[in-house]
Length: 194
Image 1 (tube, helix red, strand yellow):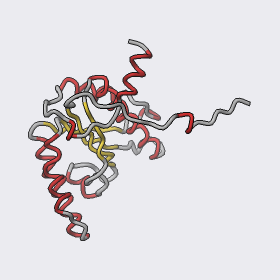
Image 2 (spheres, rainbow, N blue to C red; image 1 turned 120 degrees about the vertical axis):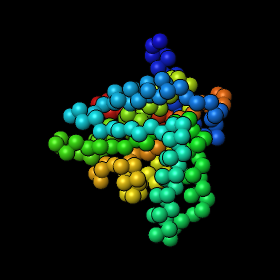
Image 3 (cartoon, helix red, strand yellow; image 1 turned 180 degrees about the horizontal axis):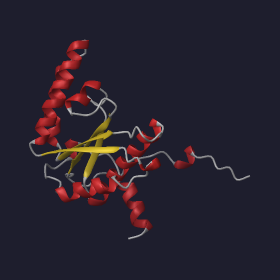
Image 4 (cartoon, one colour; image 1 turned 90 degrees about the horizontal axis):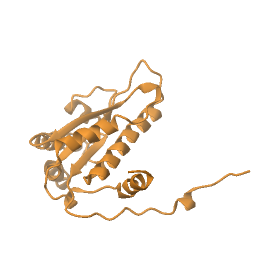
């Protein structure tokens, strides 16, 4: 287990969606390890701004009902309600084994720029992706739905200054998933040697 194994895990890290899940539950021990590894992310001034709320079993139904209710309330008021989106919010969470609400809680006593705190939370999420890949678990981060609705904070008993980052879905894949494609890093890199 060395650099070759690590590089393989990086290559296997990808988003895998519920349609690709087998329906087999992810063992809670793996979910605990995913969270432990997320907790090891880099953090400026040791603020550790990442927070997690795990929905599994019947908790997924509670998540579905909560997010659908928030969506309906907000979009009915602003005239953007879509029945199909509402139905998806009610049913899609049940296709995942676990869904982890990832949010940011800032420490008001430490003056760390918000962008650095958001970066730290996304580093934690990358650790979650890598751990899931190492265990052969499918996952993806959803930032749609009610993620950016201010009203969602209250629905999940969060503080006004907290920020929902997304919903991290987990499921056992039906089979092998292809490696995600990327453009060559050489097209994105400038080397300054002199």
